[in-house]
Image (cartoon, rainbow, N blue to C red; front, top):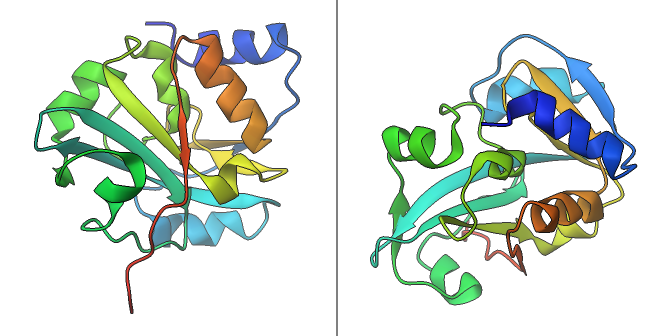
Length: 166
């Protein structure tokens, strides 16, 4: 496991600009809103999912998004999805619930989890994500997140994630 030290080393080696923030542990989007107000850029939430074929997905969307899980498979090219189990997340990504981030893909075997980034985040000048723990936040460009994922051998999917009707 390369972990956060490997992540920071890769950011520096690839000359990717980023900002770090330390804060109290947050476990939900609601808790993170209290901290996010001081950070510029798009804030995120992450869904660790498993489709009916047994394929795992990590979907990163804007924090305020309400995702239509019934319409999601059509947008990302999979079958019906449900939330993945914490033990699968820990086994595949090396992180616990509450610390989910696309940057956890640093420790995922290529092909073990398909990572999906909402198109708005992929195009954002600044995206705020956890650095493999929920007591910190990294701010970097959406394009930089995609670059890191590809650097680690993943093929990120950029998609328009369908919102849940109110």
